[in-house]
Image (cartoon, rainbow, N blue to C red):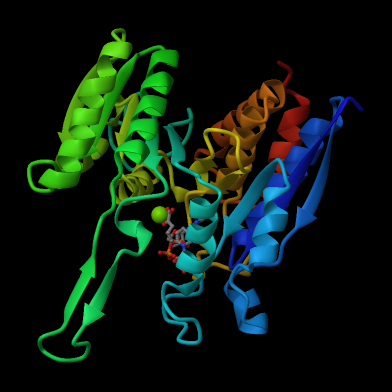
Length: 355
Ligand SMILES: NC(=O)C1=CN([C@@H]2O[C@H](COP(=O)(O)OP(=O)(O)OC[C@H]3O[C@@H](n4cnc5c(N)ncnc54)[C@H](O)[C@@H]3O)[C@@H](O)[C@H]2O)C=CC1
Ligand SMILES: CC(C)CC(=O)C(=O)O
Ligand SMILES: [Mg+2]
């Protein structure tokens, strides 16, 4: 064994543990054929853990997580109707606290229509783009408040925070990704016709950085128009750069048009290596299907592949992606399989893939 990767695993709530179990199996299977080993440390966190202990994410747990090379994350959050868990508590005090504390400024969300995947679109074309969503700022920072609560004069604010530093590093990362991809195209998505303060910062930043990447063609869409094109002509996109909220919404839509949210992977990237990056499916804890063994683990498995790329284990990552592509190709027209059956099938498909 020449290398051992030290992973933290946070299965979370609902379908999180179900899909992470399959992702871990696939990582272990792909590395079994290599001289890289893997150590896993599981962290019990999420709404269920808060109900049992009152802990969302303690400083000690956060410090311990910092010591790992990467984090594989399932999903967290209670069912929207579960009144035992205050809405937003787990999302803010666990998930967003992790992303913010570990400086996960780039939320990387690739979207690819695998051959054989059913898209709800009649003529989807070749969909292969990546959304570079800002991950630590925007309207998700909790900058707001309520006054005169419960009265007819109640005022609630939720202020979007955008720093020059935060926007610049994400935009530069998006340009670098566009330059490294064959089509060399970058689309800024915002709403700068109305959100003139934040929007103009994003726009000026793109204009400032563009000359460093003359090979990258830049265009711009307002977010409402972007939703149209994601449905009518998703093949036009290559790299999209956008803020935290718009990126959240666009990537669920992107998941839907590329065959379902159960296929959509993501990475929360710490760009300067000061903390571990974290890899998770785009979807949430899906309380409506939790415990039934029917969640699609493919998004979690593809997130694990993104993690292996990030750790420099490109051959292992490409093998997983190819095994997924082979498996997905055989799905068309067949009965949906359960979570474990999809994991079995992808582990089996790995055997036939060499790089
Ligand atoms: N990263 C995270 O941990 C996230 C957590 N959440 C939390 O998850 C909980 C549920 O949120 P929702 O808005 O319902 O979003 P969701 O993504 O959990 O579910 C939306 C729909 O997609 C389906 N779905 C999701 N993943 C699937 C999979 N792997 N296979 C098959 N179907 C799948 C669900 O059954 C549901 O019908 C909430 O507490 C929310 O705050 C939501 C999004 C991200
Ligand atoms: C609960 C949100 C903060 C997470 C989410 O929906 C996402 O990151 O896609
Ligand atoms: Mg989301």
